[in-house]
Length: 244
Image 1 (tube, rainbow, N blue to C red):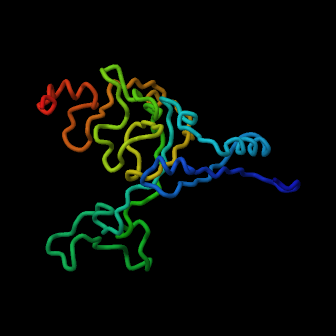
Image 2 (image 1 turned 120 degrees about the vertical axis):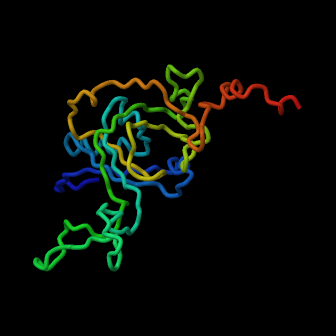
Image 3 (image 1 turned 60 degrees about the horizontal axis):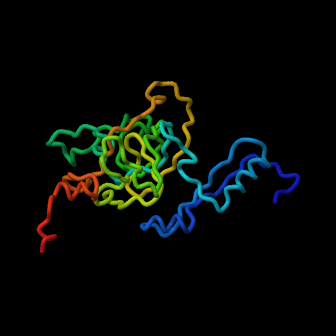
């Protein structure tokens, strides 16, 4: 309900995982909640659109498409309080330096009588908010599609989860999206994906990608097998334990 004389400029929708989203993330007990701004049309249209999303799940394939460029927002891996050599990669002082050598020898002139912000100093390293632009979408998979990771080079059906699961994460039980390159942050840390805010012109951003092969071997050790189906039995041959 809105008052008659109130001017509303910005409409936002508070979106969270809900109970179902928490149950599909076994390492989380509390849902992630984020407010998303609604744009386009007049105020009444934005309110109607926001109300139409209540109690509904927004899937990843309804927001993004294959070969599209998106932006990834997240928080980088934190390293705590670190010294100036590790934090800014400054040169170490000579070995015989008094009171340590992993330092900055001169931090500025006598006047102005303060340390400039451009001088390398020790402090917090990592756990920073970062935004990466133009990450190309290679593939989008559904949780109930057991062949969502299969390509023309594969003889058997493959899912995105590698043998033994992803290291420090486990199995993927929900819809997933594959992006080019790496994304910021550690495992299990939530990311924000948004539509690209720039119009793409270059050839590498507009070309269609045809993935030839997706490796699903074990990421912990020397993985040889891609799946746990007939490929495993053909490679190992008849087992002695089956004849006992």
